[in-house]
Amino acid sequence: MGAEQVAERFTQLYGTEPEGVWAAPGRVNLIGEHTDYNDGFVMPFALPHQALAAVSRRTDGVLRLHSADIGGGSDGVTELRLDTLAPRSDDNWTAYPAGVVWALREAGHEITGADVHLSSTVPTGAGLSSSAALEVVIALALDDLYGPGLPRRQLARLCQRAENVYVGAPTGIMDQTASACCAQGHALFLDTRDLSQRQIPFDLAAEGLRLLVVDTQVKHAHSGGEYGKRRAGCEQGAALLGVGALRDVPYADLDAALARLGDEEEVVRLVRHVVSENDRVERVVSLLRSGDTRAIGPVLTEGHASLRDDFRVSCPELDLVVDTALTAGALGARMTGGGFGGSAIVLTEAADVDAVTKATEEAFTASGLTPPRVFEALPSPGAHRLT
Ligand code: GLA
Image (tube, rainbow, N blue to C red; front, side):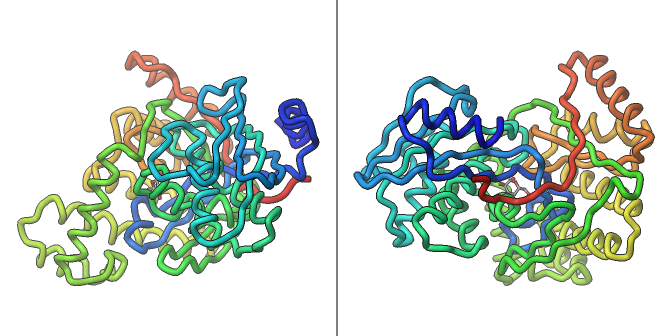
């Protein structure tokens, strides 16, 4: 759905034209998983799939929200009074945009209401940040319309607050920053401690390479307990090691750190993943900067093994994608996002795309599973105003 259609639907719903239409993308993460809540490094890029929002201001303290395709969609408009917005009061998709309005107001920005129509092509529950896209598109629209003119990083922080406090999912800052800050043709090398960032050119097509996203369609949910347990375990590891966050353990000191943790086996595995994963991000950055793109494949695969064996957030379907793709000749593969389902990424020679896709589909069918959705990911623009 394009800007014009979203604006037209807005006009049908609310009887006037919207003041504008905005877009914010979903993302895949190339490398750097479960590092963001440890103040570590990540490297996402934006997908062509986006959430679009047509928005107008209101002055009467009312927020009206509508979507025909998010969360099953509905014909009805949800009407909320701004002064009654409260954390954990909503378990529908509307909690994401409402949470952003709540977070902006909590931070002291004067928002007096809005009419909103949203439409999204970011698959939900696929580990591709459909919720961050919803948050960021609303934050950007309201920031433009109400004029605080906040820096993108601050918008991302407000969106994270909406997700952590209002929705109640204890996620890190990667997804919102990716949606707000990514640039076309680039991956975003982000230091989640201070949100400092570098855009790293990532033009796979020019090198005869492709990056496939393979959505297993196994659903995941981050407000569920497992994500929170990993996060708590990492915090316990940092406390035991006497550092502010696991980011503060240099890779060169990993063995010594693990020795200090002794028989805290669970914490040992979490720490080993986070510290080695930060190192993998730095390795990928330097390989890309030196033009050695094919060499990132094995680093991605190493990251998957660490998520599967140490961090334990993979699942049989994700492992099946990775194993099958590698056997079919892919250069590297790993789960992406929080895990427990969702999507994997596969780096492959352009010439091998069909073979890898076919092998994956056949492996799923042979295991009695619904074949995954496979698409090619091109690094796309971050959030922006369309009209
Ligand atoms: C989810 C969270 C992110 C990040 C990833 C794992 O996508 O929203 O903040 O923690 O999982 O890297």
